[in-house]
Length: 229
Image (cartoon, rainbow, N blue to C red; front, side):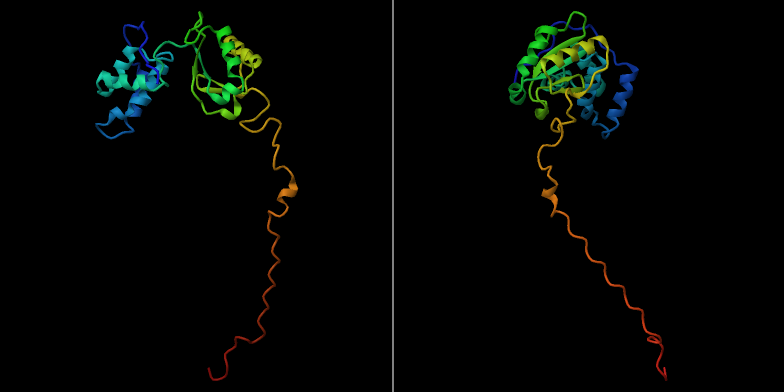
């Protein structure tokens, strides 16, 4: 695992806003009294969003103070999990999957687009719109190559449709989340290609059972008491 360090340039302070405090209270309330430290990961996540997509050092200290934890304990967590960004990111943070399935399906060409449109890895574009980072598997191997931008996946990428995607995001135009071709989810493009012959299922359905014969009506007097009863 690579060493993760705090950014060299840091803001002087970070204040927990009333909105973030309300979130903190809801998170802490999920745990028993005295166990507020259990909320550290979700609270760091919410703090990262409130801080513009990354965790400055003063924000880490603010979370530690709010949860009654030592600063070093929260710093250990923030530097361990790669979901926490320790340096500024762009408004649209592109995480490019470079693991084997994506690499075999053209991730290198997508990487070249990132370098062309945004700049070198970890660089934030001059207008603050984009930054990018190559990451390990994001779990969408069937739809490789793919990227995650903020909270959304964009899959089945080509250099052409990825460039258009970045241009549309920069211009504020609506974009399609998920596969960038005609595929739906991880289904085969164009629909199912195997097990589509109806004859394969001809014997899979049990034949309808014959109807049971109707019960015969009792004969007259069958249940009449015998004499003497």
